[in-house]
Amino acid sequence: MTKKNEIFDVVDENDRVIGQALRSRCHGDPSLIHRVAHVLVFNSRGQLLLQKRSMTKDVQPGRWDTSVGGHIDPGESYLEAARREMSEEIGVSGLSLTFLYSSKIRNDYESENVMTYLARYDGDIHFSPDEIDEVRFWSREEIYSTLGSGTFTPNFEEEWKMFCQWCRKCPSRSDSPLSFCAGDPFPDLFNSF
Image 1 (cartoon, one colour):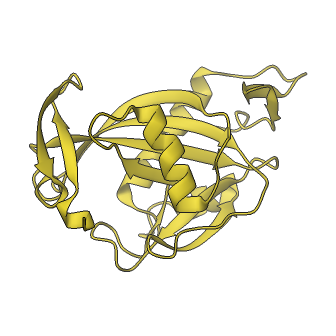
Image 2: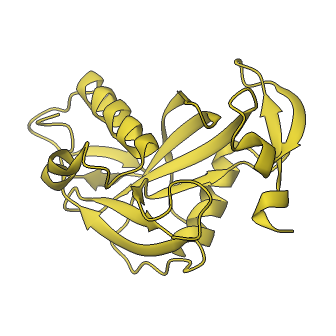
């Protein structure tokens, strides 16, 4: 099955499945709300992995985007999709994922209900060349200085804004590192947000 012929569950504003539609219909018709899972992958230095979308993608080709992001298959949970997409897109599996927040991304092109997860990873990345042209870790400062330049997808810029808001709501103690995923200590990602 080609990407255009993929079937998505269509959901209502409360995320209840109300039908199904082809990917090609959901992309281009914002009345068809569909589900997406995102994973923000940070390394131990507090840098965020971003992927440069392949020039062959039907949405936002050639722009930098969230570490991992993908549509939910019919009957699949958000968490199952996040794990599957991590394996398919960047070749990483077996990581603990921590739920961060849910959001609704709405624009003139599509409507997505999104659940975002957090992971920490310092190993090798083996990305899918069919989906991704390049990956690299970005510092917080690099991201801030690049926002609004057209380098990032609009959805990533919205995701970054939500992540920064989430960080401000969850201040850390200055005397200990935070731990989100199975006891893995993160660097203090939350200062300066």
